[in-house]
Length: 321
Image 1 (tube, rainbow, N blue to C red):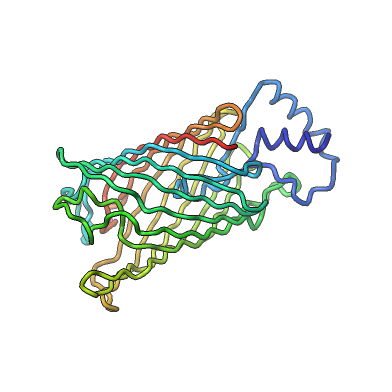
Image 2 (cartoon, rainbow, N blue to C red):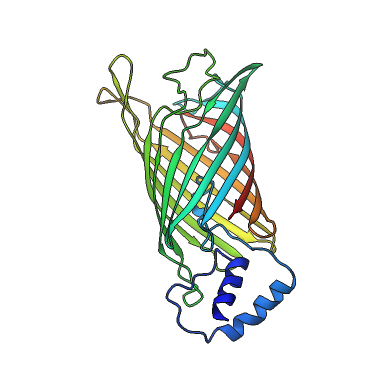
């Protein structure tokens, strides 16, 4: 009886429930009416992002009752302005329109540990001139240090993050097109490490995350060595469960990159700063299916530098097995 109730609760709210270490059954009489009520309405999973502090940086998240999950998205980005080192908004030099198709696979390795692999294609366009290529594939691991439970509802979920992105796509260093329509990569492989704190036990939920990206040195064809500075990314997220089938999340990102190095020496005026805002609307379908619509606006502040001012829309489909 208890195991079946746990399964029912996880189906309804997989991101909220953790029975790890739970031995008491005194709360069952209080929970049972709620289970019967929501089940009677035929409500699907009322999912809140298990780690929304990522701010959409990671396309795929596994909830406690999911062992295998797929993510597929179509995205379109309009590049409006180039932002110079002096924070001046200039005309776009490279592609003005970017469309991508991403595929991500998530696999649970342990109760507290899962991994995701993401790859995809990108299609660029500038005034009728087109180019395409693969995006940089990435592998990510998330380990849950602290779970949220009914027994300790005010304890947030805390996750550690470790990932790697491989520079596989064409970068500005290897582009063969004068308007860079074949560029789909930064050209740098990097290691990602950080933490994610998320509170989602009630309809109003929120979180913060910090990620540090460590770029690996890049050796050019002439023997010279380029190296990006450390990148720091902070995200603050706030969400609300509108109903059993709809939730909305939004937040702000602050990303800075320290000065890059060329042949071991710092390059002047090469620090990067970007602030962006995002909004996601999730529709929970039946069983293990969901649809997400996302919007991102970058280069929000007049002090942002060496970045691009863009607007992006994404439509994603998620389902678990």
